[in-house]
Length: 392
Ligand SMILES: *Cc1c(COP(=O)(O)O)cnc(C)c1O
Figure 1 (cartoon, rainbow, N blue to C red):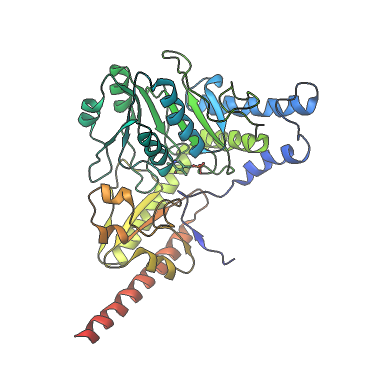
Figure 2 (figure 1 turned 90 degrees about the vertical axis):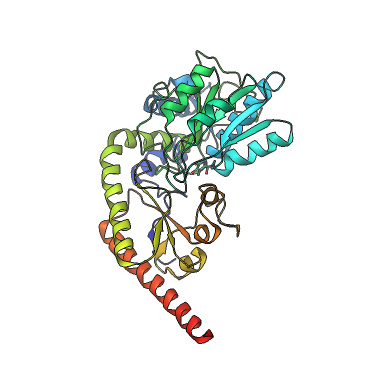
């Protein structure tokens, strides 16, 4: 594989070496099942899970027994939406989401809609922010859940979670947030923001793939949720299956690192992001920033290069790993649903490239990336200029 400069950290991140080190013993030495009560292999595994659960709970201001481990944020989102719908469907059937949710919220919401759930999609402004008045007026006495993505995976928009939480609490409606992109980048406290349920994972935060968490508030209100995977009764009967102990240990470790280093990490990363943006915008004419610079994730940059299909540009960026949008979405040909919902036209949306910076990027890499991108853009534009001239 050619070593590329990795700027696709919204899709996944490099495992921090400290995380892989923390995971290793649970593959090689302490390989017991965390549910085994009869020997030390089981006890040690259980202790590792317990320790990770505590670190993760503390990090978001929750209690240990409010964290359910899952196989990733997709599963957490599915459990939250489908599990709550099943609990409430006889009495309440309105689900409110934003129109720019990640596919792992959007798809289950559409499945529920096909079953009779009244799904309301809130509009967003040109920066991806939901309209709080529309939220208020959409909540009725049939509403069982509001689910709004905390920080966006394509455009980096950070929603006003405190305000959304306050509105939901006043209305007596449960509030779920997909915090997958926010965790480890912005400080969050589920109590300050009145968040009742939250989904996130390890692999967007320098941890391993295939492990996630769903935070579910235990008290005031107590939340009943119908499990979607049943079996051995693990995770308080909410998610059966032997726990992925090495991954959970790694999840705990990556959150512990975030707890210690998040602020300095993000200060450095957002300075690199600004360097990338200034480099691109001062070297390349006709670039358009999608969303805005403020109130967005410090590691996110989403730019349209006028008149250049993003696919063509990305294929010519030898040495830089980026994408057009959500990894789960970029296999498809249509421009991003999110960008279209910001009111961006199809041509500009098709020219959008998403940059996601991370802990392991260096200033030298950013300089090099600017150089590679500028060269590719100039080349594509001058070629299409020649084609146009020949047509005249
Ligand atoms: C990546 C991502 C997910 C899915 O997480 P997995 O653990 O890969 O299932 C969900 N929501 C958002 C916002 C994401 O960025």
